[in-house]
Structures are given as C-alpha cells and as structure tokens.
Length: 272
Length: 65
Image (cartoon, rainbow over all chains, first blue to last red; front, side, top):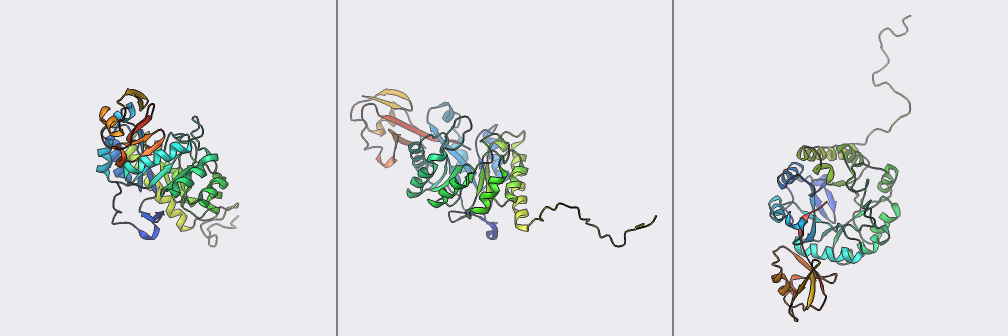
C-alpha cells in the first residue's frame, strides 16, 4: 500500500518518522467527506504525507457504504496510516492493529485507545503499555495522546519515535486549547511531534507549526468545509507557512513600540 | 455448533474452519479475521478449527480519521 516518495522531496527539511522521509508535513484523514470524489480531489490538492484509514465489520452499514474505498485507496497511491479508532481496551487495539497490518500491508499504526466516548480522549492510563506492546511487535506507532508532558515522555521512553498530542477533542475544530502545554512539549521532547485532533482552521495548523511542531494530522476541518478541496489546499499552505516561519527565526514579541521608519530626518520635527 | 460472526449468530457444522465461515457469509477481500479477540492470519484460515460460541470478527477497510 505504500507509494514511492515524490521526486521533489526536499531532503533538507523532510519530515522523518521512524527513519522514513516525507515531503509533506500534513497527514490527512479520509472520513466524513461529501463523496469519494471530493475525498480524492482533496487528497490530490494537498498531497499529504499519509492518509488515515480504518477497519470495520464487513457487512455493516459502514462497510457497505465504503464498497469502493479499497479501489480508491489503490488509485490514490498515498501511504496509508491505519488507525485503531473505536478501541477501548489494549487487546482491541492490538488485535485491530494486527488485522490492519495484514490488510493494508504496513507496519504503521495510529494508536487510538479511547477512554471516554464523549470527549474521545485517550485512555492515558493504559496508552503507554499498549504502545509498548505494539512497538515490540514491530509496529511503527504514532500514538494519539493528550498534551500531558509525562505521558508523552513515557511514550518516548518505551520506544515511540513520534507522538501526536491533541489540540482539542476530535472533530471539534476548536484549535489548540492548551498552548502552554503544547509549547512545553516542544521545548522538552526531541522526537517529532505532530498535533492530531481538534484543528479547525489553517491558522491553527500554521500556529502549531510556528511553535516548532513537526506536522499536523486533521480530517474534519477539511471534510466538513463547504469546499473541502480548497480547504485542503489552504491547510497545505498553512503548514508550509508555519514551518517556514519556524525555520526563519521569528522576532520576539516586544512590550514597547519601536518605529520601523528611521526618525532622523523626519520632516517638521521640532517645528512649533 | 453456534458461532457468532460480526455479532450475528450462525449454525455451522462441528469441525468448521474459519475458511468455511468466510464462505458461508460470502466474505469478500480485502478482510482480516479475529477469533475471540485474537488475530488469526490468513495463512491459518483454512486450518483454524472453530469451537462452540466462538466470536469471529471479519473486518474490512473503511475511511478513518
């Protein structure tokens, strides 16, 4: 299911996850689009590093409405990142991941272990042990987690080579709710950090990239836009802009004003 | 014997394998299978013997976030 890297990969600033390089710092979800064609167009417009996918019971209404999805995946030829969405126990996660590995022929897994059905926040108390089991089974784990520093550090300690803290609850589009904690993560952790969940606007994505985050993963913000294809493009530009801003070394905010235009030679100065 | 496939009960002959159940429900690739919460690779589908009240999950790719 993985596609060859694009020829225009800028290796100098590629996103590197588990030793693999990606030209884009945007990961895009595939759910909730108005149609498969719109999904395909949005993926084409944004050229994401990976697209997230899932697994559901064959014969269910979900699976039946996705009957052409497998063919579309092959057509799009973008690396896939299967998720364990809907899993509430470590065993569910592990079994789902193993099934995903067989079906999608990839070791990549977005680890979702849900602790609350209203907020869809991760079960932080069992996330680390679950990630460790998957790591030992050879998976490249991208754990969906909260912005808790200790949790993220423990995920790194057991072998996760990247972590994905949320900005806000999945699908809410609220943007980063805890900038302090997210900035602290960036300051303390040296692994790639991708903000996953809760982004709603390209400016949200740009902001976290300006803070030094390595990428973003989003779905609803594009899929539920009135024009998902244009929004996908906007997010791509926002991610690029934020990354460039971070690399360029932005000025530090100052408390007092300082004129940009030189004062010497100002006409009418001291004229009473 | 009784087995449950994707939460639906089925009566199958004793000594049935996973592959027999997949034929019964007309499973179409791509799919993956778990029995009683444990993944069973496709290489074992024709030799994994099922037991009474086994819970079988047959899942297929769908969109995801």
